Length: 358
Ligand SMILES: [Zn+2]
Image (cartoon, rainbow, N blue to C red; front, top):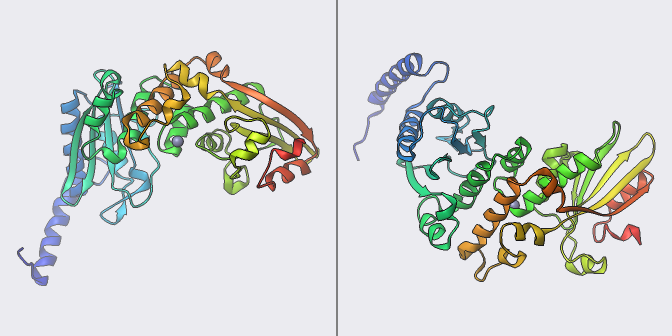
């Protein structure tokens, strides 16, 4: 490799700065593009052409983890603007979604054309952005052969996320569903259950003014992220509690599957606590997708494409379901009332939060 002497380096940097400033002022309005952003924009445009999408296309969805990660040692947030400017997709039109991810993940984008099911996945690496194209039309990707074929390339670690979210988005779910997905970073039957239960609560058991909402997941599963998002019931504000309750405890209380949650409305001023244990019918939900609950645990686990396909199929059906049918999957198993202290008792129960009703 050619070595650059220190004296020359400052000259090179100065030239780069001038070029960079010129590029910013003339080509991209307010957003200052770095060379890496330029490359991202070019790759994204190529991906758009490849999947047959045009800027501003209403059938185009862009997913990215840009707000969560770094690029070249800097926050990758400005890449949101690159995606917006190249594709015409925006948050306001629900066509540009920021997917939560760990801080050490590589920056990635997924472009999905709802019209033809084609998906372009680009991820940053040492030598710039690499792209893979996937046939994500449901009739192809939701088969063992189609899934395995697509999951072979660079998309592999993000296949479930990007394909699952894209197919659910294509069913035009309510905004809150997409909001929960952004936090949870994938869509799955567990999160779908949490979304359905949240909608049920808003319709049938909404909190009254002055009531604090608390959710207990015992045991916790993906649904917890939906509650936190829908009701601003974050664990940091003591709005959500996760308790690692075992199967034997559930069995003792007559539950075949984990209840969806214990839902509490606490009014400290009035010294009241109104509670409900809610359940979600996973068997019925799987049936709506032409599956059984056992299909979620196929032979070989995650190495079997059916592991992911069954999850996407169920989530997709639930996302497109009418509110009335969705509410039919949620049930109130038990309601109870007490003074505000009851909430503290349940929150501190740890081993068996269902035991209070004995
Ligand atoms: Zn999940």
